[in-house]
Amino acid sequence: MTNFSELNISESTLRSVKRMGFEEATPIQEGTIRFAIEGRDVLGQAQTGTGKTAAFGIPLIEKIDPKNPNIQALVIAPTRELAIQVSEELYKIGYDKRVKLLSVYGGQEIGRQIRALKNKPQIIVGTPGRIIDHINRRTLKLEDVQTLVLDEADEMLNMGFIDDINAILENVPSERQTLLFSATMPPAIRKIAETFMRDPEIVKIKAKELTVDNIDQYFVKAAEREKFDVLSRLINVHQPELAIIFGRTKRRVDELAQALSIRGYLAEGIHGDLSQAKRISVLRQFKENKIDILVATDVAARGLDISGVTHVYNFDIPQDPESYVHRIGRTGRAGKSGLAVTFVTPREMGYLRIVEETTKKRMTPLRPPTSDEALVGQQRLAIETLEGLIANNNLGDYRTLAAEVLENHEALDVVAAALRSLTKEPDDTPVTITEERPLPMRRERSSNGRGGDRGRGGNRNFGGRRDSSRGGERRGGSNRRDGGRREGTRREGGNGQGRSRAPRRRED
Ligand SMILES: Nc1ncnc2c1ncn2[C@@H]1O[C@H](COP(=O)(O)OP(=O)(O)OP(=O)(O)O)[C@@H](O)[C@H]1O
Ligand SMILES: [Mg+2]
Image 1 (spheres, rainbow, N blue to C red):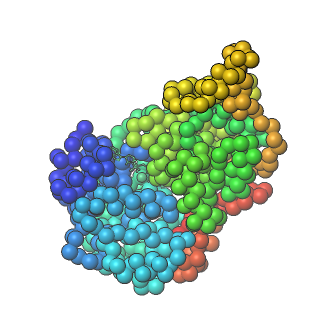
Image 2 (cartoon, rainbow, N blue to C red):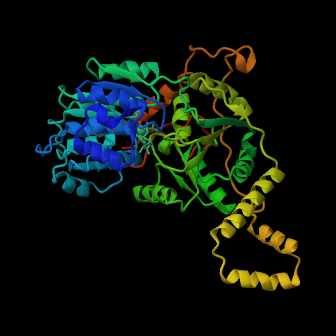
Image 3 (cartoon, rainbow, N blue to C red):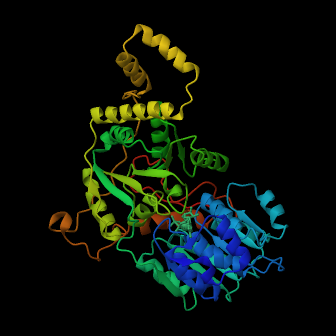
């Protein structure tokens, strides 16, 4: 471990980093900050939750000239929430240097952004669509940009975003430093990435697996119609502090969030069809623990850093292995542990194997809990609640009331009744979860079962589905380049009706 003071960082940034509670640099920070401070282009790859934001954020802030009022750095992120989060982290890193920054993203009133741009921010963090919108309106001048960052670089350079990135680059000087970061970098995308950079330093933090070690990874084989009951039982057994449940389509997310609420869980959904105000408020409630379960499309898969997420459930197996890596990476961050469960229908087992091949990590099969086991989980929770109250030693008048009750009843009965009233018993209220068609049948590639061919080869993107679905998405997006109206869409399925290949679109 390296101390930040050994990395040639200015006093003001060192103070900020200290205030953020960072004591030592993480491996990706140690591996990239030096090169980036020297002005080199860097392609950084390291597991989820290992501090890539500060790995590009620190050198980026270091390079800003406080006396230059122009935009000197541009950071592009694939989703609005991530753009907001990255700008918050950069704000903290640049706090002592008084760096001015602004985030621009779709769904926020453009007039407000235009006014804010007049205040001369030195760093812009944004989503591609809205950045292009401002370029077209001539409200964003990028000719002084010296550093360009693509966070989630592989996502930004895939079929769904590459035209947007090219359009932005036409407005950024070619004499610039380029920093690209992600936890995943499929070979085809890496080739594209290298064309964006000059003599890049490629820093890949070696790890046996693509996923983080401290996330326990399980899968549950279940028929489509059984999945919801299995999910609720698992939640009862696991009792997650904060959980994210990923669904394949927006309809799926809406139905799951509603079904969970009906069954008494504090759950809300987030996806690209919601207003930006709603998206932000749902995320805030989740961060403040006002809701326990966030149900999401892949809009929440990349980059979001929410502390305390203990469990991730893939209610639908993701469409590509990279998505799996990022989804489960919402837990097990910054050295914490986490647990991930992926639901897979019998027909989708081939997909599971491809995920395992890519991550180089096997998932452990999990038997669906019985309803009795789920009940036991809830009863244990009731005991914990009771014991927590006793430990708090703040029972006041309740002790007098207890003495009254105990005059007429056995202590054992009283405690049993208290536990029963605290236990959330299995709830069978009917809910509607529309069945999704499984992903197209995919044969497992290994001939000798699970232990077989774990090597490379084959089409990692599931027979080109990613490309074909992105093709459709590009046609939809590029025609509207100048309108800035690509509101609320991301590469996520629509309502999913009767489709297994939901088109995936990205948002601005
Ligand atoms: N040197 C450090 N010491 C302690 N905590 C750190 C350090 N660097 C970053 N962190 C914290 O670790 C968490 C994860 O960081 P970050 O979001 O940058 O991860 P990431 O690598 O970008 O993950 P992802 O691939 O999911 O985007 C954040 O809460 C961040 O504040
Ligand atoms: Mg990140």
